[in-house]
Length: 231
Length: 186
Image 1 (cartoon, rainbow over the protein chains, first blue to last red):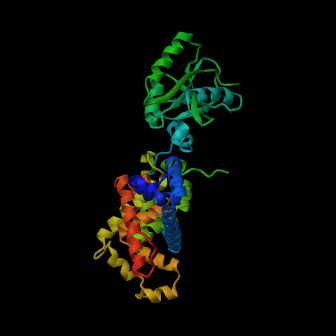
Image 2: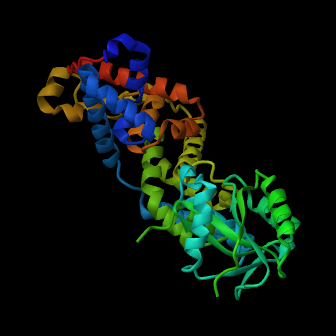
């Protein structure tokens, strides 16, 4: 393909060269740039200039040195002074933080795995995951660790990445549901095992709850009936 | 072993974990310092500012929503602090004239070329860029910010980030040409 016949596209590709050199383009754009470089010698020549600039910018910044210990001492003295004035409340266990910690390690694309994969993940993980019971105490927002319950009706839920901790807490409260296991990570999907009831509910009732939960797409992206945690 | 992610550290800092704060500081303070020192051109001021930046991180950790990477968030805070400090500092300038006063061992391009290799001339030209151009080049090349992240930090549209980067590079090429290095672009 003659790149000169597509000047606007060529300009667009050329504008991306600095990010390509720095390795910060997404896969799609990186592939576009690679293809353009392979078929356009002039562009490839300009890319060498970009790489030269990149190397010297790094060199220049690396010669700037580092701050002295004074900066850190000043920072922690300020933190200590703030804490002495008004110590911040510490939470023993926070569901939101727990979810955030697990979600933090995964790219959005990873989190968008199919429902099928998640369902499979539940079955695969059930045999190997150490079960943890997390009882939501509602208003206090704190959760205790306890022995895993094995009776009742359960669903697997994947929460929407944009759902906040308070939205999740309210959601669980509205269904009187309790997170009993998770986050469970497998095949790129992350989900929680949630107990709907301490007693086994009729199938129709479970399906209705699942249907209602699925309608809250801002909070959850996947809900399916799940077996109890393994003993 | 996988290191604790920045997002997890921020969650712990929000709960008052001083150790998490130390880890985050150790991980990022040098880069934040270098970003600030390139903006304010004063190491003492940059040291004061990074203490303020990380103190803001400590205070605001509970409000961090994870809409951007922690490093992007911190550089955004650092940029705001640096520009505010420059506005408070009398006679502070953000243009090329300031850069010209920093270091200029040789004004003669030919002498410069004789004494220095191409890399050092390029580095000198990088210091002569305007603050705006210096900033975008540092963000993209040194701080490894994507188009989207650079746009978040600087507070401009993504297309403007690309355009600004293009003109920063063009200006750099002009400075190099003036210093006797013709690169054949633009």
